[in-house]
Image (cartoon, rainbow, N blue to C red):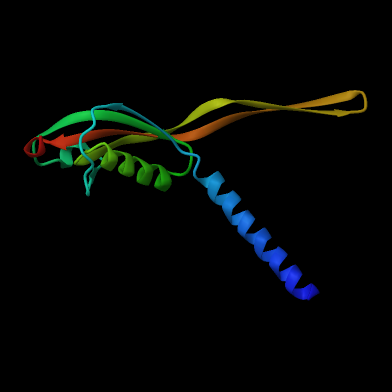
Length: 134
């Protein structure tokens, strides 16, 4: 009986940790400025305007930050799909400062101050709609 109770607590602890880690990993902010159309089922991905072979209209601009490049890319593609874009052009990425964190440790008569700049990865994209779908 005691063994079953311990195993149950371990399972609850593991599930709680998974939930916590999942919540921490999904801290991506997306800002979108543009028009919206009915959602699309597929979004073509470009890393340069040179790869686009048909006429299009820019319908908006988006910025996503937080997370890693793969997560940011997938999040922006999903946002493009929701906004009705036929394609997305990734303009690039950068690391942007979001603030500073100062930690003060008092040890006797001495204070040790550590200041750390906080930054996040940011990806910018353009959402496009093909002329044939307007």
